[in-house]
Amino acid sequence: MHSLTDKFNELRQRLKAGISSMKHTGFDPVYYVVFPSDEIIQAKLALPQFLAQLRLDGFKPSTLSLSKLLNDWFRSHKLRKIWQQGLANEDNDHAVFQRTFSERLDKDQVFSNAILQQIDTLGTDPKAVLVLTDLEALHPFLHISGIEQQLTGKFKIPTVVLYPGTRGGSHSLRFLGIHRENGNYRSIHIG
Image (cartoon, rainbow, N blue to C red; front, side):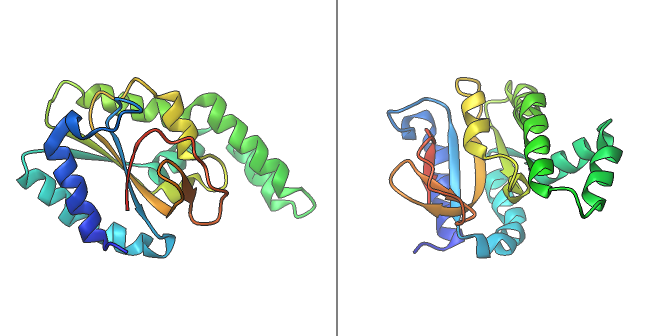
């Protein structure tokens, strides 16, 4: 098993190689750095050093925290108080809340719109790299594979996904190591 440092170094080499390092199944420059979910804290602690190494390599990394994005969206949503009241009532079925919340996140395309906006902002810089962090915030509402599918063909810059989970086959991942294996990823998996 490769260490997080080894995975980051492999990613750096792939980014340096550019589009020629992409696999034949697609041209979107999306890279998943896959690490066990029990290493989430280590990945967060290693992120500043990894970003500094990317800058030394000549890249201009930018991060987008999915946890912050979700929190900001929830805090400003018009249904927030209703959702909070529903969750406070112990008689309510939390599965209904989860389903409603998931549907609203998907309908509003909260994550895909924010990622696309960030890509569009950074897209004119040939050295830009977008790093998506805090994927665990998606659980249990959404999966990054669905968000990636919504954005297929729109990734103008290398986008790195710090993915807590496990690898299955060559194209499948298991989010947080608890969800079923999902083979709907067209990206490069490192780890």
